[in-house]
Image (cartoon, rainbow, N blue to C red; front, side):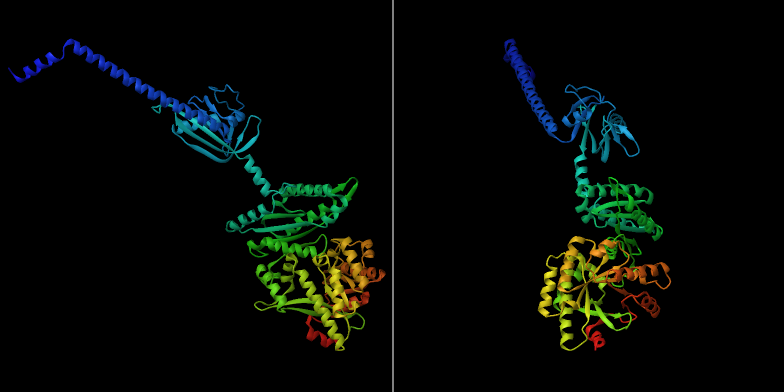
Length: 604
């Protein structure tokens, strides 16, 4: 018998029909148990997935972004609360087909959300798309700033169909915060932070154009005083109306207006062909201010001081803003309604302002500052009647720094108050020396800044120094410009009255180009008028200026004041003005400002 036959016989003996039945039943039970286990695991997995989906839906519900899930047929499968609000969906929105009410700003056109999704799906079944800093147009035709995203996810296991997932991030709150940061709250014009950013952008684009760029700083004159008269609300109404006026004017002159501080505005003008364009713009604004505001039937006659800087005439672009402020400071010092243009050729020195400011303190301690004296002569005798004290700074590194460089820095930083004390002390000390050494005793006038006047203890300090040096108060005069005298009329007049009681004389400087009324001049305790140099510069050939100067001299005399004319540069001026009856003259024709050791030789 073969081996194979033996094995077959053995198997047939072991696997009887009963055994086969038991084996089959066992196999069936095993397969059933396996299938049950697989289904149980699948149910667990589905429950887990369902739980995760439930968690995700809850997360989407509290999410600030609007989330939308669409089927291939653009049926809405899920929309969270912000999206339901945006699409105006009811609670039973499932299977609703997306309508055409929501549109997306694509730059050149508005496109419906449903059309956009179809187009992107046609281009690529598995697509991803985003639009940053765009806008949505809602049911109510409101435009909402948004970041917009679309993505896809598999709907079936085989990837044959995909969901579209839309996410919309509303930028409204961020834009509002940005507006609050970059816009002035009162007028809603861009503020100084935005202005500086835009100027930096202009600076970065200089290489793209050869055109000039101009900055115009506008300061509405005397607004703080006006507010005390007409009230806070009316003053704010003036600023709002002026801001609207600038917005409308910008369309004609192509500038961007900014509201930098309470009564300060800035205009940036690009593509300037000629400086005369900017002058015409400032003149138009001045004319408008004179007539544009009424309270009831009463018209307010407003004016503004303006400072202009133009690239490249006024220096490098990076300094254009500072140079506009320098021009504005000069305009304000000259009086109301004045406009000044900052030109590079006027600035013969180029110093770092921060360095100079830091050096000022050491400069006072180390006696780098020096008082010069310019004589003022009697018109008839041509002898020295008095002198004006003028400050000079002999810097160890830069040499002699002109006052028009360091004085504006001192006024901006408040250091002018300390300098004023120094000048007063030096003048009084020198007066005492001249008395002791039998020099001619003359009056010396000292220039006064508004900051000194408002420092709180100005008059007391003057009295204290007079007592300390034991100098006759009648040998001291204080000069203040017409414009500054009117800045805080009530407070300044009271302090000048107190100075007059001490015996100190008051000179109203740069008189003739401001807006001082006759009534104010009568009240103001000045002893002397000093006529503005601008009226004298071309007086020989300018008939109008001749009439103005004559009138001012007569006005001063009628009020019991002496009249000084400065800026005398030749004998023709001397002869003409002597005939007009002015009392005193000052200028380079007689003498330049001199250090004390040279000046006192003239007093022998």
